[in-house]
Image 1: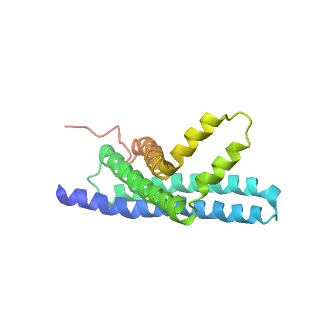
Image 2 (image 1 turned 30 degrees about the horizontal axis):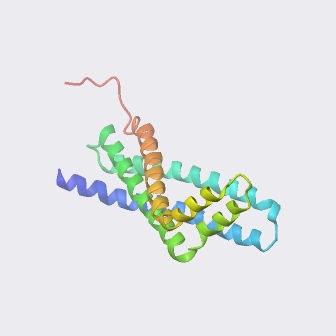
Image 3 (image 1 turned 60 degrees about the vertical axis):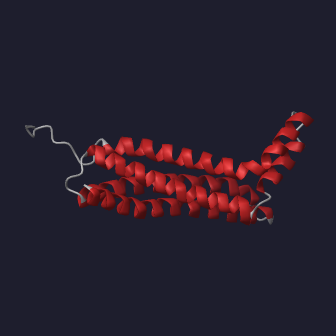
Length: 180
């Protein structure tokens, strides 16, 4: 039983690395398109390109999650739907952890002024009063940590729902087999 758990976590680690890598690659591509837009070239195309990148990332993550769940089911003939679901949850957790850690490193070290830039945009908004701006200013040092946990929970929940959907038919159920 312990060996089966280790096999599941080994497969989940590899799959989580790939899925987290896809999300990190998407983030890097959108950063690149942001730099291109800042330079002034093809500004009108950037929203469309970013939308296409997001759709491609979403489709790739869905496809890869199903692919890895099928592959795990084939590699472990004793795996039932519940075990495949647990595998999918583990993949979701590990990929969410990888992506969230990358995002935390990005907003903490690579672009630490990300939240200050967002605040400067809010300062121009006539709907924001000085009390609201002050409260947001006080939160800025905590936002990298908050964003880490928000990303972690959101990505893990999305992957868990996806796992629940896919695991219903992985492995396929045969209604004609007598259960004894």
